[in-house]
Image (cartoon, rainbow, N blue to C red; front, side, top):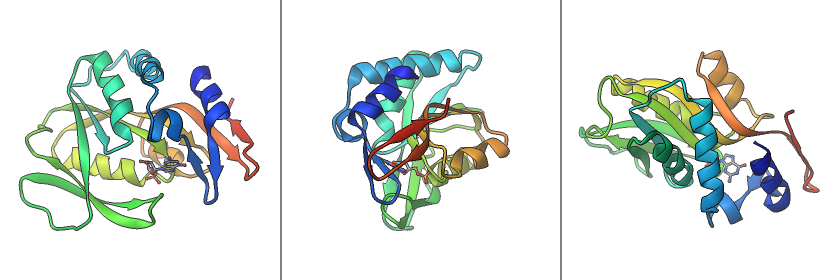
Length: 191
Ligand code: 5GP
């Protein structure tokens, strides 16, 4: 998506450790118009699907997830992050390795909000090694629901999450795929 790539070039900062910082439109301050455009683009890409719910992970997935849910007119559910693995029986849970914080955390979704038979579009802001998405997929499977597809704002194509998920047979649509970033701030997108 040209608009998003342009914005990443203008405002993205490359940090050590292969982190792309996009705080001024996605991760801290949110450009709501850009979110609307992104939601519309995901709706166009997934127009052949009829999701019953959108599922994302707090906190940075929520804005993108909201934009997608708006387009399809379905609820947005976000998985909550817990520090401890102490979870109760009212939730579906999965353990996730955090790329940005270098630690494990538990993600939980109340059993009230995902039902057997739900058709789910998963959404996240970034795809790196795919751990967050694997956690969401585990939760969907535990609930007896199904994954219709995966919506990613920015995929870092030089990490293996996208390859791993596509090889497992999931449909992954990413609005921008970064193939290379260098410490001097040069960002190269997949054509
Ligand atoms: P993964 O689980 O695919 O390794 O990493 C994805 C998660 O880590 C996303 O939910 C996102 O919040 C965070 N993340 C991974 N890489 C980046 C990055 O380069 N920049 C930012 N802002 N977040 C990232």
